Image 1 (cartoon, rainbow, N blue to C red):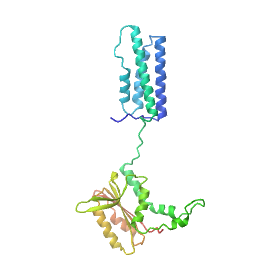
Image 2 (cartoon, rainbow, N blue to C red; image 1 turned 60 degrees about the horizontal axis):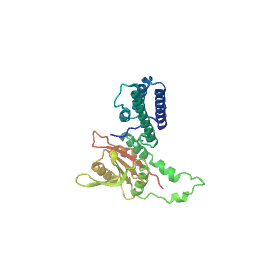
Image 3 (cartoon, one colour; image 1 turned 45 degrees about the vertical axis):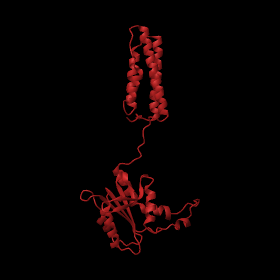
Image 4 (cartoon, rainbow, N blue to C red; image 1 turned 180 degrees about the vertical axis):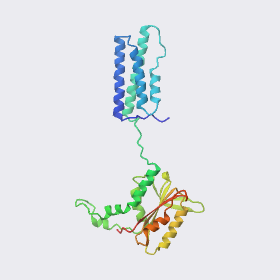
Length: 279
C-alpha cells in the first residue's frame, strides 16, 4: 500500500499534530491531579483519530495510532486504570511526535504530479508547432540587449540548412516539457520499420519533420508525407513542414489535405507549415 500523504500543507498538519500532543500531555497532567477525569481520555483519543483520518490520504496512520494506544486490559482498581490510561496516552503522544518528525523529513509529503494528461500534452505540442516561428524570431532576429555576451553576429552564423537542423531546434523546445521525448525512434510498422523523427511514447504521438529543398517539388513532398501518414502507427501524428524554399503554393489547402481525425481514420493527423523563416 502506498505511503499515506498529507492532505494539507506541511506546516498546517504539523501545527494540528502539535496541538494534539499538547492536549494529550494536558490530559496526563489532569489524570494525576483529578483521576475522575477519565472522560477526557476517550475524548482525546476520538479527536486524535478523527484528526489523523482528516489529515492523511488514507486510514493507515489512524489505524497505526489505534494499535499504539490500545489498553490490553482494564483492571477494576482505580489506580490500575489510571496507570494504564496514562501509559496509553504517553505511547500515543510519542507516536504523534514520531509522525511529526517523519513529516519534517518529507516522508508523507504530497507527491507533485509533473505529468500532463493526454489532451493537455496534445495541446502543448500544438502550441509549440503553431508558434515555432515566434521562437525563431525571438531567439535569432529580435534586438539583443547591449550587455548580452551573445552578439547578433553570432546568431547570424546559425542557418537552417536541412530538416535535421529544424528537428534539433524543435526537439530543444519539446524536451524540457516532455523529458521522455526521443529522437529518431525506429519501430516495426509491419512489413518494414519506420523511423519517427520525434516520439513521445507516453502519449502515443510522433512528429514528422520536413524541410523543403531546392530540388524538391510539391508533389515530392506530398508523396513523402502520404507515405509517412500511412505507415506511422501512432494515435497522434504531427506533420511539421519548414517550407524553406516555399514550394507549397497554397498552405491552407495543403494543411487541410493532410488533416485527419481518428474515427474516420486510424489516427489523428495535424499539419503545421512554417513558410519561411530564413536564418
